[in-house]
Picture (cartoon, each protein chain N blue to C red):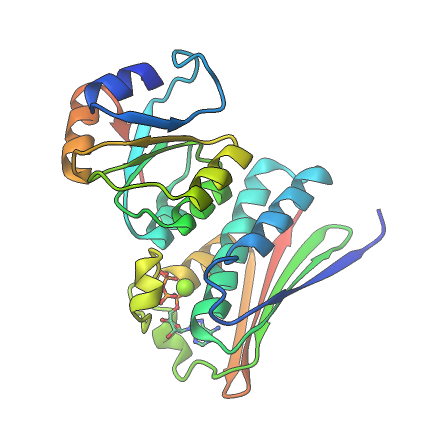
Length: 117
Length: 138
Ligand SMILES: Nc1ncnc2c1ncn2[C@@H]1O[C@H](COP(=O)(O)OP(=O)(O)OP(=O)(O)O)[C@@H](O)[C@H]1O
Ligand SMILES: [Mg+2]
């Protein structure tokens, strides 16, 4: 699934992206979670991270796992510190008003699979 | 390459910088050409250990040692130690408070993650500090 499709499906707002072409990156899988150690335990391949945790540690966790696309659910705001971090690390950040449950359901229904853990 | 050894200070309750040591370790391992899979295993351990020092201890340090065919990651802190190591190693066991939970920590998965992602996992603890030695075969 391309970034453009994700944005359309979840009425997402693109906060930052290192590439202009939103049809470039293709993601096959996603993982949703608010507990960073669960991410660290279960993410075993490239995927989109869906989370309700708007804390810099969510980005730090993504960095460790080479996750470069993070969707923040529930209409949370990204602060400057997180924005700077994302830009430095070439990450794509998306915010949406949908909840984690809704984002997951919508993207899953449209073909973005879960991780096999 | 000669053996190298790095020591990084990790401060208690340093929630802002938390993880920066592991970022540096990750970049360094990448630079010297360690393979991606091994880097991932090491940085998961390093980040979990770093956050544990920040959240649960009075401060300490992480040591990274690169030898011929072995990488060592050592986490040591100044206390207060872990009373029951077996319990602490149980997936889901956590004493993390609200500060840690706000950051997404407190799943009780850190120590199990470290054990799973290292080839050898040795832990000792007393009120003066906790010492964790993780080995990885290159
Ligand atoms: N360095 C340490 N010093 C003192 N106690 C520790 C230390 N590391 C872990 N512990 C204790 O062991 C428990 C389990 O640690 P573990 O890392 O597995 O989970 P956690 O840190 O609580 O949550 P998570 O790592 O999933 O975010 C902790 O809640 C804490 O009580
Ligand atoms: Mg922990």
